[in-house]
Image (cartoon, rainbow, N blue to C red; front, side):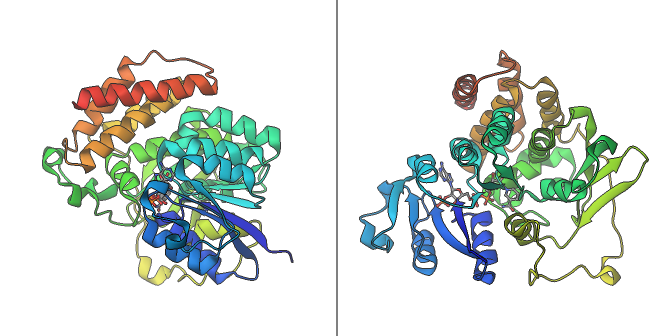
Length: 382
Ligand code: NDP
């Protein structure tokens, strides 16, 4: 069997590192064709030495020369601003999209135009421009096999089913670090407290997004786009054990759930090996020890970002993009200590309310809305 060539966009992040762990176990199936990073040059350099990719990108300002990075002679080297050009230049079977934030949009579209398999962990690009991404994917014959665990679960529960029988999907949420905390304590929470997620070890941005539950709201928009659903067909359920990764409900009342250990290597491997299922080397669930699976309805008064995201999902147009852009700026300000945790909602809501929504946007409208929202959020934070 020919080895599949994999390019990992965002190889130095939490998803990127896990993807390389999965690939490391399957050398007979895959080879690493390309790696991209931003600022973590030390880790990228170690990854280059180990996997010898033919295409590499990183923030060139952070390196002295190619030699220091350990680049093999024939490796083509790009700046982090040229990730889309890297995608256009290489011949890969699978692009893993593990860049965080809106920076993933252009590489996503470039990968779609290659007609390859795209395995997105990144959700922000689909939130910003889901309709355009899905149209481009269809036009160029690309395939999307999601990595984001909830979308992977839905994908698996829908596989081989008659879609007309689907009633709705249930996206599960662990509830994040604040699920049991009184709202009155929220304003004084430190960055360290917010970054302590009870179930998942992830990058900083998504961990803060999990605490506000806007991450779940982004997943609502992501699922809407990936599976062509109406917003009313999507429900969020708090499931603190995080063992059910999401569910599908059918017209007859039957519900299918996908369960598994809380480890991103599981959905990553499935997106890479699909439709095959191979030994992952991960522990399996021990039902004797699980004891209970519990569920709650999310409390939108405590977590208003979720309701705001549902509002943007229903409105469509440029509003989801504005939601994402304002959140990116607000989360960054919180992480840098410029504002309180509860200010994230205040800033994002104000920017969303100020925006004049544009329906059926083209890419240029989305990029303009993104720029506008970032500036509007910065002005509020100042
Ligand atoms: P991390 O912050 O850990 O990693 C982000 C990666 O993107 C790093 O390789 C980083 O490079 C790179 N990067 C950052 N900014 C840029 C930029 N402007 N241009 C190019 N590359 C950039 O994030 P995660 O791995 O946690 O998450 C990645 C994506 O996957 C996010 O969209 C997240 O929502 C999604 N996701 C993550 C999950 C998880 O378990 N972590 C679960 C489900 C979804 P460097 O480090 O070198 O600076």
